[in-house]
Amino acid sequence: MKSLSIASLALLLALSGCSSADRNSGDEISQQSEEKVLETEVKAMEINLGDCFFALPDDGNFSTVKTISCREGHGWQIFHQGYINNLSEYSLAGVDEETIKICDKAWDDLPRILNDSALEEYGEATLIEIYPTAGSWGEGDREVNCVIGSDTTLYFNSILDEKYQK
Image (cartoon, rainbow, N blue to C red; front, side):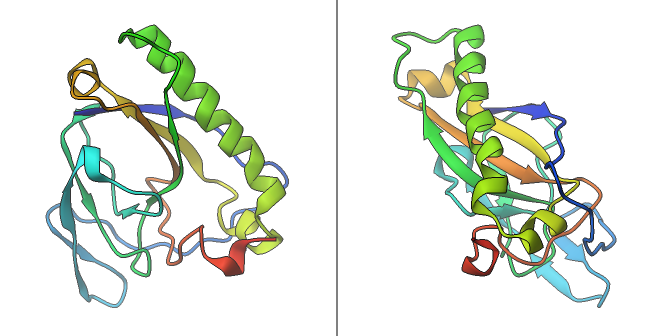
């Protein structure tokens, strides 16, 4: 099981210029072209760098998440992964502190590594952290996933695409 933490941050020096589409609940997504897009359910401990999500789970603690191709309209993407290596035992405060350090550094690095086009497209994006719960920690989970995106904007490319890098 993983937990979500939301940090409301906007990229500096960026403007919003993103496409949008209608969101529906369920396993299929209806985009502006009315095409149906299939989501794939993945175990939370098996998500990877670059994975995209139409939406994140409503529950703060989750064991599965639905991924979608980043070429399809998506709201969220894992743009950085890190690991908590300096805690000997689980404490929510300790995990939270380490998660914030990992993701804030990755977030602060975005203007340095992304080109102007990416900064413009993701200008109103938010940072969300996905981190271990006490249960997943007991199973050896130390992974932190830093997620960029929005509940109101859809993106149609991966932020990790070479075209977005400086």
